[in-house]
Length: 160
Image 1: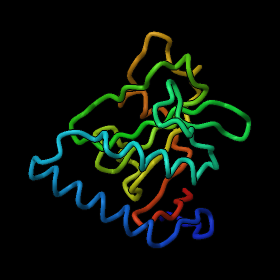
Image 2 (image 1 turned 180 degrees about the vertical axis):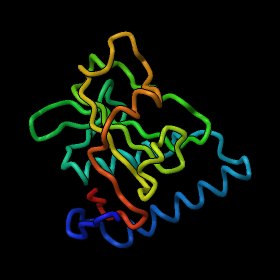
Image 3 (image 1 turned 45 degrees about the vertical axis):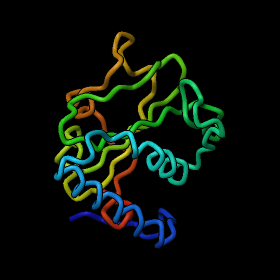
């Protein structure tokens, strides 16, 4: 049985509703072969990571190599995968950031099914843990990790 900490994450109900509707619409548009990629969701992933992890998002939307800075001045690269087909995730130039935050939706081919009660999971991966020759993260590598954050469809933190 999953435990939920209702106090852990504070998002406005309008934002929760809008994001849930958005992903529902994306699923429908994908099924109808209108949307063919998942690049539209990068802004949402950056917003959520900024909120959940108290990150300062870069003002420059074209910042090279990283998307945010944490309270310890560490550079954070944020990536999202919502693809039902993609089996690996490009991670950018890991020499440009300290941590990779990888957001996976339950739609993602990379999503670990053992977290079936979750809608979103976020992994915080030290760049040093990623092999130097890798420019992608694979489902096999992700399966060895534990998410930093698991959220249900109502954006409540799952504790267990």
